[in-house]
Length: 203
Image 1 (cartoon, rainbow, N blue to C red):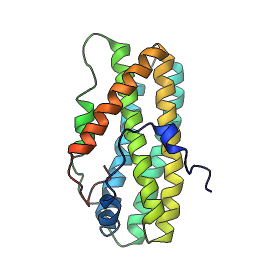
Image 2: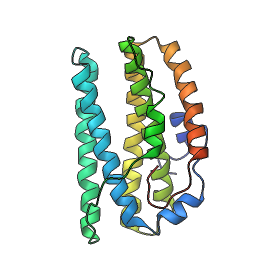
Image 3: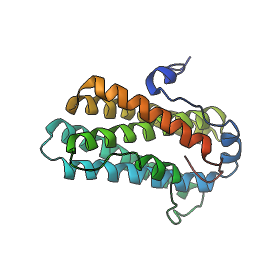
C-alpha cells in the first residue's frame, strides 16, 4: 500500500468526493487539464505571496509561506514541462469558478486576523480538493509518467493543506479554527455539488 493511501479522508476532511466521471473525461482532455493545472499552481504561488505582503509581521507565516510559494512555483514549472513534452502551449488563463465561489466566503472588514484565518482555511480547502483530484489522476490516468507526477503532487498538496490549517491555529484560537473549518468544508461540498463536471478544469 502506498504511504498516502487510505489517509486522505483523515487528513483532508472533505465532505464530498469528486464525481467519478471527472477523471474519465479529464484523462481524455489532458491538454486542457494541464493548462488549467499550470494556472492553479501559479495562483497558489500568488496567493502565498499576497499573504506574505499583507501580513509581514507574522514571522512564522512569512517563513512557511516563502517555502510553500517556492514549491508551488516549482510545480508550475513542472506542469509547463509536461505541456512542452507533449507539444502543447500554455494557453490563456481560465476563470476558476470553484475558487471564485469559495473566496466569496472569506469574511472582509475590520477583523484582520479573522480574515487571515478565512484566507488560510480557503487556501487549505483548495489544496485539499486538488490533492483529491490528483489522487484520481494518479490512480486512473493511462499515461504512466503523468501518473507518477500526480502521485508526487498529491502528497505535496496534502502537506500544504495541513500547513495552512496549522498556520490558522497559530493566529486564532484553535477551537474557533476547527469550527470555521467545518463550516467551510460544508460550503465547499455544496459548491462541488452544484458545479458542472467539466473536462477542461482541475476543479
